[in-house]
Length: 343
Image (cartoon, rainbow, N blue to C red; front, side, top):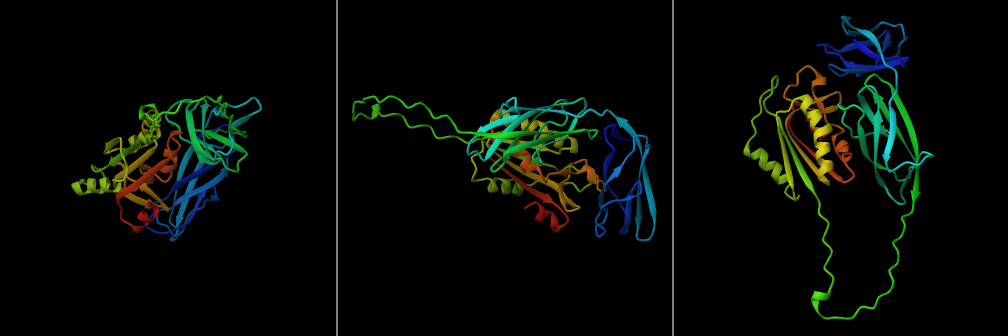
């Protein structure tokens, strides 16, 4: 069953097709879908018109030998109320403007989404924000490069495709200079005890996250060695690490919850500046994208993999305090393209 908002007159359909041969065509309700004909088991995407009384979505695939198969989804119309968007920081004015420091190149924006359904996407100026996707009415945050920008556009979309876009103008405000202190005569002294104490040097909080997947169900098991851990320690030797978080044998659901919710909340409360992630496990390249393989990943199901392509940007948006993120894939992969995509 395909759940489609009653407010939508067209929908985007995407998926993938498995076949031992190359494919000639993929159609959705008779409309040709885009896919790479040179790729084995390609992904496809197409936007189709869908009338309110249309009851089915039919996907058909034909290979080069004219073998054809199809899949049918029943259409179920759902609530059609779009999400409501609010910005909470910087505090907005009544005329929908946001005051930011003059000369600021990066600004951390926070907000809140209200909707009857779960939210599947929040973006600001086309960049995905960080938010807990399994929470109703979530808060979101994003550190955005605003140099030469005069406005931001926030887009929120719920799980049924209802979407809202709201714009705020950016007003650059010069900081108020501190008051000039009155001149005070200070008696000279040669006693070192009379000299002001030096200001403490700012500290940086750095965390290491080690994801170690080895007990696979459909992929060969991986047994970590002392050399593997030594390699990670050597790579991060120049960092002064305050905390190391180790996670072992994560499923797809556990990986998504950890990076989307758990790590985000811990980083915010710990005011972390630098996040270093080291992944040990299987990796795979599909359709020009690199994936980490959870322990419950299926060999023939791309949707059971973890797409980490936007992970560094996502972690950068965890908190205003985060200014550096590093992700290393120490993964067992069968093709050289994986290493090119994860460099």
